Length: 115
Length: 111
Image (cartoon, chains in turn orange, blue):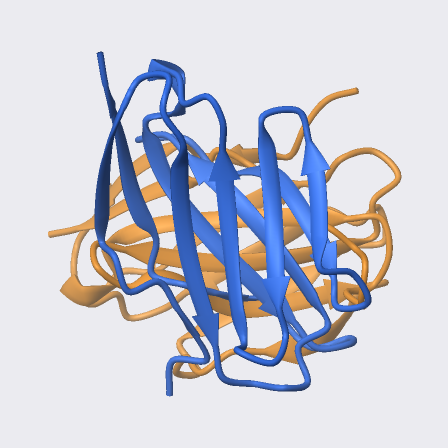
């Protein structure tokens, strides 16, 4: 069974640009979550989608947005990039909406560098 | 407000010995706890989880202990192996709320 697939794996963008990251969940998984990891900051929750609806949202500015498609694939978008957005963006999927007992499974991440 | 804390940024253990990674939490509503392992340039890999109705869960060399009264979680790895060298994250959730992660502890297993 294929794992969570994220594309692109690595990318470099310039300040002010926008970026779109893509995530294909494990087959059959309907919930997709996004996390940002920066050095010393651990994993910061961005948002979670289930059945094309955003269920939870983290404490990030409106420049960060996401969506989920009917096939459960998800994209996240960051507009007007800032240097501080340089991070590893991780997508995770789980079979159901996030509730007690559901484990999430991560992809390998997309490394974004903003210059 | 950091609801899940891993107070040790790093830990060094000799191969074959026990590694004990600790995690504290503040939210008494958390009812599900997980440990993830992360190698550089890879996504976190799920290791083991525990529900708040239990106080211990084992899976091979990995055992997670939960002390609800102390709001403390620990991961024991016995015996420690060189391949266990990685960053370990604990995480917790309350019902349908988001999974909250600690800052991570870098474990180094020395030969």
